[in-house]
Image (cartoon, rainbow, N blue to C red; front, side, top):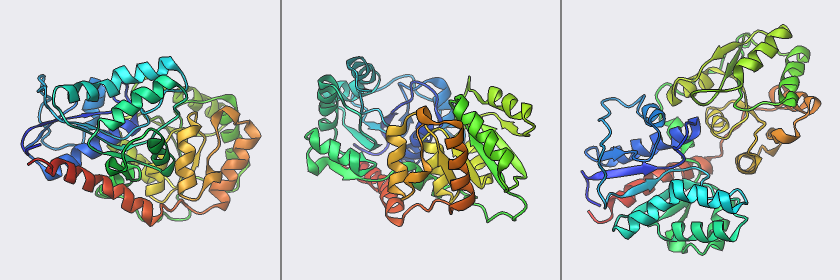
Length: 357
């Protein structure tokens, strides 16, 4: 594609979520570094996602209402190449995301799939649809070895396939003012990022905070998206047990990165809050609902014991895990190889945009 033309970015942007907005913002930034005059649009994203993506973008241009038939598409990172082990899930994801690439290809548009995770793919329909999608791309860059192996099983040609790490790692390291200096011993901050909760999780948090010896100067409570979240109920439950916490409502992805940066210990129920916290050198404990993809990250950074599935989170187990991670473990250190592979997303964007100039 020639510089100065329009480029569309798409991903898991049909509903608002910190991680997917963060990835879209990262790839937008890298496109504009290469080609400042390119019009970057998000034609299939919800308005609140676009507003969040552009919230920290100086001089962001208005979003065009028209899309050229041959506009190239950059599919940014996410875990949408999966079917949830159901045929219904396969077709639902295909209509929202993958179909845009294949229909674009029929019109002569190129597309790249960068920084994604793959799986689970438990149905024949899911495998067939995603094989067509991935094989139609100019390049497929996957964020961990398991996804690379699955791409091979889907017969994605090796000449199109690249192994990277999650793009959020490199993006966070590019932000001015991050990371902060080590805090004073008497000014430790705990961030509770809770997007979904059950009795075991909340009970375990309260037991840890009431019995542990480490004293926090502040306990911050937040979610990772706009709209409804369980943090109000969690805050009420903590206060009933005499645990003071400050509720920090979600504003935008950059504000949440800064909030994570203020913390020393981070409990999260999601994927990208943990990745950002790890990139900033925090102690991170993950108790996610979507254990399948989140565990891959903690395996890769060499801290598999920091992650436990929410579905199996009993009160005692959560309290023990929090004590183990926050009292007896060092902060997560993202391996140099992962940092380098994350930065390679940026290089791949440059190479892809340069083809056909």
